[in-house]
Image 1 (cartoon, rainbow, N blue to C red):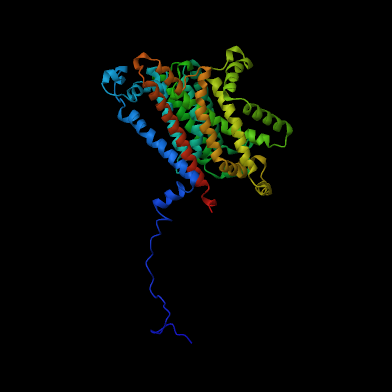
Image 2: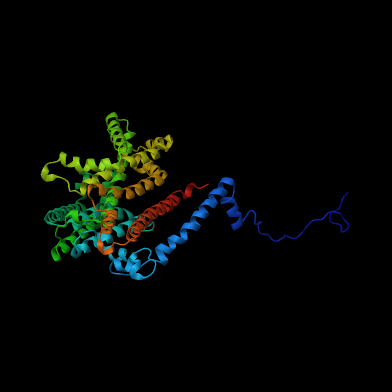
Length: 458
């Protein structure tokens, strides 16, 4: 019988634990990563060397042109001319600094640009409110962004007697709603005309100041916003600024925001219509989606610009800026509908059956069970459509709209800044602007996708 514990035994048993050693360099660390990702095979090695050659030959020139030899200050073209400066001249960033106001506001009157700034501040507040995950009162933020912001932006940016009357009607309607809910707070039984018995019983048990708290909160917010605009109108005035004077980043953000805000809900409706069992609804949805997807955006813009005035009386002819806004929103809605339809088809049949077993109707089933799951699945597709829409806003120049890119092109013929490097500088600035906006949307969508898929990681 063998005894392994005896000192003279041929067997060896280690009794202490050895310290953990680092992994070999061939399987872990930077060298292993380079070998696995850049030189894993012949094709990968050729592509890596080709990319390295392009970077090595082009990157120093780019850095030299846009940074080392660039001109950062100056008041006219003399600051960016080689014969005037006495050295090689790269990008003329002084031109961008001098024309930056025009790039932002276009030909909007200088004395009225504070109105655009207020809209920018409201837009930034709405974006932060909606996109910040821990922000309070998100539903109130959605009401602010999707309802109050478009109305306020329309009144502030356009101005004039027409918007003053529109603001007056809005304030009267808001005050009327506030009075109605004040009466309902003390006599809740009157709300039985538009409220179910169960919800009405819940409201009846609350003290008067807590009854109908959510709608009263929205009305109060609308009343404050419209009241502040009315005070501004009385204090400093809101003269009309024709849309022909709008331009630059203001128009680009406006077109993108309108397209995003309207294309998503319209796309949801079209996607549900295409999957509807009602043949007329399904046929109309299919015709709209396939027709709009079958033509380029330029055609849609021309049709919106020339045909929309034919469907209304001459005195109600749409504004020249409103026409491309409608065209862009309809075009994006058709693509959005197909993206959302893909998400709806990915939902298992059991989800529909489970929702119906709970007694939910069609709209509650879609709102509470199906659409939240479908939209989460197609977040990359939705953001991809938004990014494409943002870049497609440059096409509105074809119908005479001065967007951001068009304002840059307009300044290139200005003799004040006519230099050999002005064009490259202007287009580089445009590329940086569009890249930062699209990259920001992409990064946020990735974070949302990770947060919503946290419970499904394997």
